[in-house]
Image 1 (cartoon, rainbow, N blue to C red):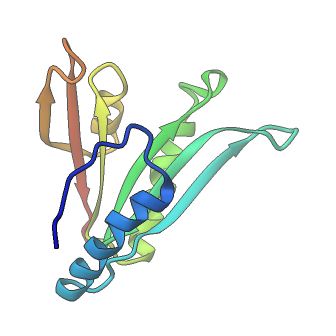
Image 2 (image 1 turned 30 degrees about the vertical axis):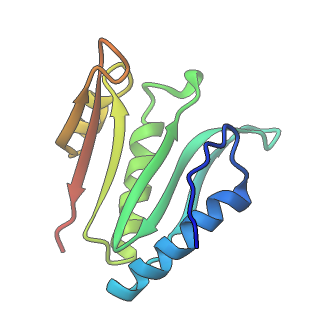
Length: 141
């Protein structure tokens, strides 16, 4: 059998799954719980329109906060803190070891620090002139 590598500029979901499935199968052979569970906390207005929220996945007994967006009119009013606390409560309910996330220097690293997160690493110049932080909060029971 001859193998080749091909660049695809706009990969399809089917192509992504073709790469992901054998990786998940391998991971599952090493550690149980290799399929993530996605969860979201949605901020809606009176018209039921989604204006922001928190999107996360539970994976290997950790909750990864993938997205956090608080609408401009709600900033500084505790909405972000409430979302983070709800995510932490969910992580505790699911017996997670902790929560983790990544954020850019120009976004909200100070906010996450106030929520009890600590830096576990960063990439300098991503994007150029800024740092990309990786933060975690380990849970105690």
